[in-house]
Image (cartoon, rainbow, N blue to C red; front, side, top):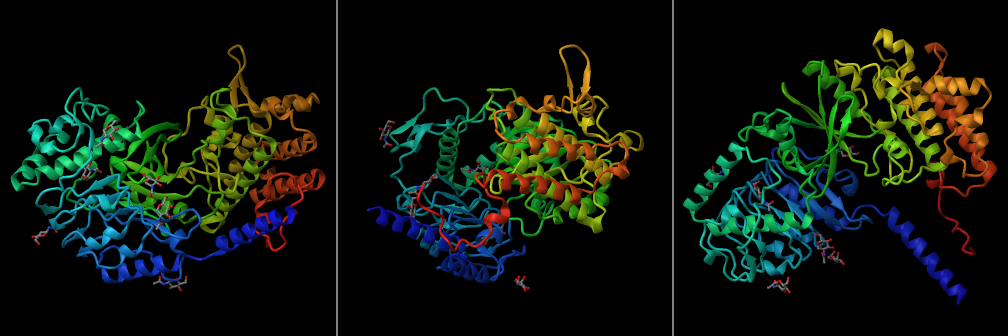
Length: 591
Ligand SMILES: *[C@@H]1O[C@H](CO)[C@@H](O)[C@H](O)[C@H]1NC(C)=O
Ligand SMILES: *[C@@H]1O[C@H](CO)[C@@H](O)[C@H](O)[C@H]1NC(C)=O
Ligand SMILES: *[C@@H]1O[C@H](CO)[C@@H](O)[C@H](O)[C@H]1NC(C)=O
Ligand SMILES: *[C@@H]1O[C@H](CO)[C@@H](O)[C@H](O)[C@H]1NC(C)=O
Ligand SMILES: *[C@@H]1O[C@H](CO)[C@@H](O)[C@H](O)[C@H]1NC(C)=O
Ligand SMILES: *[C@@H]1O[C@H](CO)[C@@H](O)[C@H](O)[C@H]1NC(C)=O
């Protein structure tokens, strides 16, 4: 009995290992290679036969075990002509297909009927014609379909099961056009766009114009269908009160998105992507995405944007960029070229006279600052010692990597805990906002939290260096150890600088007093905490030349860690090195 279960576990482990080591889904890859070979497109795609389909190909997402392609998103790639038959239809696990904003002609490809799991289909802004699919029920899970701005003709199939309220914009049509949908109600509907501010004449005008044209060409019913779906679907997602589209947010900030992107110009050309970036969206997507304010950073507002396919990114809107376009682009090129698991990847940027945006990865747990300082009980999980160590080691590796960029001359310039995140796949810290300080004109005011990280020499020279990055990192280490903000107030008005406070406590030999009370519950870590405190103190010495270099800091921290696992046994989470050792010998199954 016991042997049998052991065998099953072993079998499972071997299966997992084999699957994990498995390369791309071969048949899906071939289908996509056929598709792209037969389909003329004007924008280059990085679909290299020898690179990893699941990890590197633009616009492709695989399922979790990497065995099938589930999403193909290629908006604005410049496709021309009809969709090549017998290509996409072979991706039988496909759930999301977006080919919108291309120049696709011909009829709706009927072989897409074979995609039984298709849930999202975006074909808007193409030149497709002919009649609509006769039977939508072949896709039992179809949730959103968008055929708008094509040249389809005819009627939509009669047997629909639409539900929900008819949006106000469609109320002008006779109720008979909604016939056959038993659950469509015309009563008590709230306007679908109620989250948007009412003063948007531009939008209203274009909607009216659009409707006018559509009425003229007689595809009214189709629009009703599409819009009803929008309403049904957007309702499902639920809307927090702070959810507007990015464009609305920018507009509220005094900027008209229409000014930024005019429909006539190819907006995607302006959003600059970096190679190997696995996102396929354009500026228009970004502006349309629902957005939530994440917070106000040193250099401007940060928004969380959810794209139509549920991809989440962070959009930073930079204020007071001092650099001109060329300098900005040069700096972004360096940042975009940094690829390291401990550096938050810059996906894309946008630069115009009025607006500067940066797009990077989103980390759901928020910054280390939020993890440490958010109010207790407020969704805050105390950070354990192991995690703090991994944040420190990861961030140090990230900064060390940044310092090697641009021929070893690159400076981060804004190291602080709100720019450090926990990479959920590695469990280690990673650094964001790389190289921004160099393109900004403003230095944070002297009493802001950011000032608490600033090396003393920077206050005078106003110029960040690698040594001042080391100082700032030392402050982050102190923050991890003490749980205190770099600048905070005690009960009275007195402003406490963390570095000075730690100095004074250590001088009085009350070292144990500095550590975060939340850490006291973990046994046998005092020695490591003291070692880390020493490393932190060496980073925040006054004289820049006396601070260690960042790669030395990495070694010192890893030294603490190595002794730590030796002394306490390797019960903690594994380090990246351990994770990549061969897994030939199965772990003991006794326990
Ligand atoms: C595809 O990748 C291989 C190996 O990475 C490289 O040698 C080759 O030049 C690439 N081909 C194209 C068309 O980019
Ligand atoms: C379709 O989706 C279901 C549920 O997610 C899954 O079990 C099934 O394997 C999928 N079909 C294909 C062909 O991938
Ligand atoms: C249907 O689509 C939803 C996403 O909207 C997905 O979570 C679910 O697994 C899909 N079911 C099948 C059977 O494909
Ligand atoms: C769509 O097709 C029609 C006729 O084939 C052509 O005149 C028109 O320019 C096309 N529109 C676009 C946007 O490609
Ligand atoms: C209409 O809604 C009711 C209750 O929500 C549901 O039970 C019923 O199946 C729906 N009918 C159709 C045709 O979708
Ligand atoms: C369909 O596309 C049009 C044009 O991009 C957009 O206005 C509309 O909201 C989209 N509807 C859905 C269901 O995504």
